[in-house]
Each structure stands twice: as structure tokens, then as C-alpha cells.
Length: 376
Image (cartoon, rainbow, N blue to C red; front, side):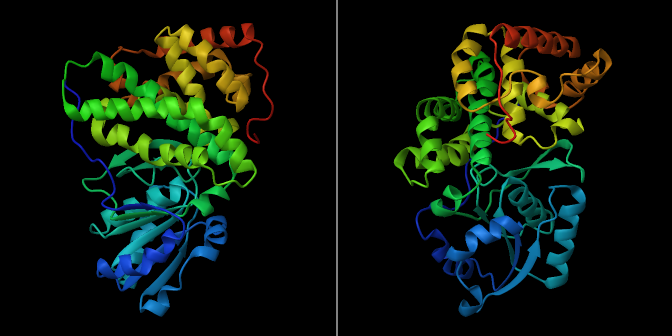
């Protein structure tokens, strides 16, 4: 069965600049939004507040709603009900990926309301992509939904993201790196010769080359509060280039094996405090074992060491897994409709088990001992 090939390339409008939030009132007016729901995280709001305008001075009513913590069906439903009860004209999402994904889901499902996104972290491409990653209320991944239209506006204030937690930024770099490795096999093995797939391929290449070249400098600059060109390039790669891979490539540029491994291990409570991108980084290594790309793993090893990224079960507090528990993770990785089935190889649960065990052996031989990767 051929893969889906529909382009959902970008937000309708994207602005990344100092004082970007100053455009918010005019942007809402241009969309005939007079009453807006403002969904935000508590810490995110504290970081963004010095730069946010007072919309009431522009005649725009704001319905303030605090995010409950997970992009779950119950949270999406709660936000939708408030939107209906308050009769808003649009929704603003301010925060990290789960806040933005909840705003996108609620805005679309409530009746295709205009969605305005203000990312406060660059930990993933949630601000760019027209989809939401869904979780249970307890934090286990349950898949994703793709929407037929993009967000109306994305405003990026670099100073807010520069002041965000460093570990989230590192996780974003790891998640961005996965865009290359997950799309590589798909895009090199397709017989399709379409311009959009070439764009997807080049975007994926940037997701590999920019982090490998500039991430160390960018993270050092972020640690020192320096708004450098290298940091801006890596930050926008996390948000923009990673979103363009799937935007142009659709299922040819979607997450595959690495994210399926991530989805499976999120069910383990021992992993809940590890960020999304950290678990995806482990999934990249499992995928590379399945593809037998040992040289590429060796190439990545110094990068992984620099940022304390996991390559073994012990790194994710899973060293004590029994064979039965490992099999459960493998079965979950290849469950029906799992992303891994987009991969050109016909990967079985046994393939996943074998890959994890081979990776354990490889990690041991490389004497890779990391610090507490939950606090890079």
C-alpha cells in the first residue's frame, strides 16, 4: 500500500523576531478575533509575561485558562467546552509542545477556530506542524492526530526561548536529529520522484547537519544567555526545519521506528521524568541497530556523550527489565497502527528485542557511562 502524500507545509504565518509579541493585538484584529481563549502553562506564562502586550487595551477580551499538564482527550475536551461556553473567536496557546498541541486540537475540534501559537521552548516542532501528539492523563503516549489545516499564526520571541530550561532545548535537538534518521530510509528507498520529497530530504539533512555542527556552541551560548546566530539557527531548526520534513514529505517524512520505541517505553513509569526527545534519542539508536548502521552509531557517539543522551536501558532506569517486560515493550513498539510500520523494513517484535539486546552489548563495549540525563 503506497504511503500518503499530502503537503501540509507550514503555519499560515510565522514570525520570529525580537518583540514578536508586539504584533499580537494587530494579528488578532486582522483575524476578526475580539474574544480569545488564552491557554498557557504556569512557568511559561512567567517567562513570557514581560514581553506580552495587554490585549484589553486593544479592545480584545481574554479568557485565561491554565493548562492541566497533558495533551489528553480529557484536557482537549475541557478546553473545547470553555471555548464554547465563553463564545471565543479563537485560541492562543503559549508554552511547550503539549500546550501547543492541546490548543491545536481544541481549536480544530471546536469548529476550526483560528489557532495562534506562542512557543516558549524549542523542544520539538509542535509550533510548526498541524498535528497533536496525544497522551493519557498519566502521561503514556497513545498516538497522534493530523489536522487538515495549519495554525493561523506562530509568534516566536527568541528571548523567551533563550530563557527556557536547557534540558528541554537539548531534548529538542535530539528530537530534531531523529527527523533525518527516521526519514532517511523512507526517502532513499522510495520510487517517487517528486519535488516536495526533495524539499523534505533537504530539510531532514538540515536536521542532522545543523545540530551536529552547531549544537554544542548553541547550548553553551544558551547556558550563558547569549542570543547568538548559532543558537538562533539551532532553535529554528528544532521548530521549523523539523516541521518541514513531514510538511513536505507527509508519511515519507514522518516519525517511524525511533518514535515507536519512544511510545512504547513511555508506558513504563520509570521513564516518565525523561523528556520526549531524550527517549527518542534512545529510539534512534535502536533503529540504527535494526538497520545495521553501526558506523553511523559510532559517528553519533561523541554527540551523544556531549549531551548525556541515552544508549542503554540503564540510562532510562530500565536496567532491571525482565525478558517478559522487554517483550511487552517490543510488542507495544510494533502494535497495529504504530509509526514503525511506515518503515520500509518489515520490523517484527522479535527484531526490536534483538536490537535492544545488541544495543546493550554495543553500549557496554563502548564504556558509555552517563551522568543523570534527566538533569543535563
